[in-house]
Amino acid sequence: MDNKGYITVFMMMITAALISLVIAVMNIVDLSNAEAKLAIAVNCAESDIKAGYDRYIFDNYHILLIDSDFDGRKEGYLEERAEENLRNNLGESFSDIKVNLTDKTYIMDNDCAELKKQISDYFIYGLGDSVIDNILDKTKEESPLNEGVMEEIIDSADKESKKIEQKQSNDKNKKTDEKKSKEKDPRDSVKKYSDSGIADLLNPKGGSFHDYNVDKSLMPSINKKSFEDRIQVDRKFSDMDRFKEDALSGNEWTDGLKESAATLSYVSNTFNCFTDGDSPDKALNLEIEYLIAGKKNDKENFIAVINKIIVVRLGFNYGYIITDLDKVSKMSALAWELCALTPIAQPAVKYLLLGCWAYIESVADAYSLLRGNNVAYLKNKSNWKTDLSALTHLEDFCSSNDEKGLSYKEYLLILLTFHMDESYYRMLDIMQMNVNLNEERNGNYLYISNCITSFSLDVTANYKGKEIFISEDTGY
Image (cartoon, rainbow, N blue to C red; front, side):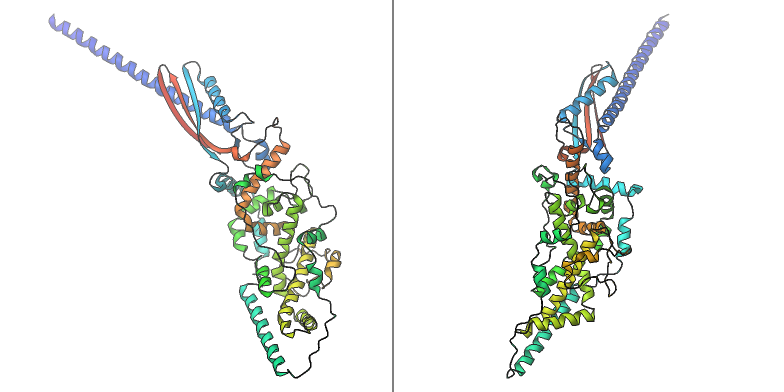
């Protein structure tokens, strides 16, 4: 009998223990299910926020970003929106739901790393084209002008001057002809132009410049110091060392094309330029030109870019003209005429006159490019266009098109390789200007500096008296 009582007590204890274990397991499972449910709900809340990407920027620039300011409602609105989403999905069993938006990655962080990543993805997934391959294919041959060639020219001029000086010394008893030359110096017609004067000379009638002026103080690029290149030409053509610097300043871009192929392809497909025609829905019509020059309006960007294209062409054209014996002979004779009083200067003047003629040819090249023609990458006797008076009749040189040559936009992409660091910020400038021009924002201005591409939601919620914490990160 006593044994039966012990057994009964023992069985009751076992049963109570099992029931406690089952209840504990059920609580653990219930809590685990609650955590899983909360995690799923948080994921849905993140997806809801990500679905609020700016549609205009994605449709036009293929970039996904979220305005954390959310039309002027500030960042707290995104947290309120996530909390409301969680309450709707979780039901009454969860209470005291609190959300913090943390670990935000802004589109401009780390030198626009997020923008660069999305541009790279755009290219990788086959949405880019082979524009850079086309340029590289057309420019396989190296420029005929380099540092070594220019040094040889300067050395040659120095040696010729010394020979003339020696001859003058030997002939010191001979009477020198002191009559000043009446021969026309082509440099006189070139140096009267300013950069804006050259641009006005080349601008086709009807070229579309928008009236928009960029307020740089509001733009993302205010955070990036601009690189002031010295790609310009001294149109006096009076100093060989300065001319050497000018003639070589447009070189060294081939490696830049290869390294930045994805970005350059993206720019070519996404942004407008002068020869694309008018885009009335855009703040600036000359967008690629803005990426290069960063000036406040279309006209100033046009002036800057056109003169840069002329510099790039100058090196190629000078590289050819110094090998053309007829042209060298003609400029040598003109130099003798111009240096009648100072013969020792003739060798240098000869090469500077050749540089002036190469510059005139480069202006004609730019004139043709702006009218939709391709210009031969390397020049020869058959495709050289100009005479020394060409600036007065440039319209005579715009009819020829070299199918194997480079186009205006391709030259812009070459120039952009000198400005890649700033260009990402200027792309964001253009996005900001155009989204505010075209998207209804109820009077609220979108600032790209507020835009994020990834974030975390830190969520705490009370479930049956127990606090649950979930942290989920997400991004594009």
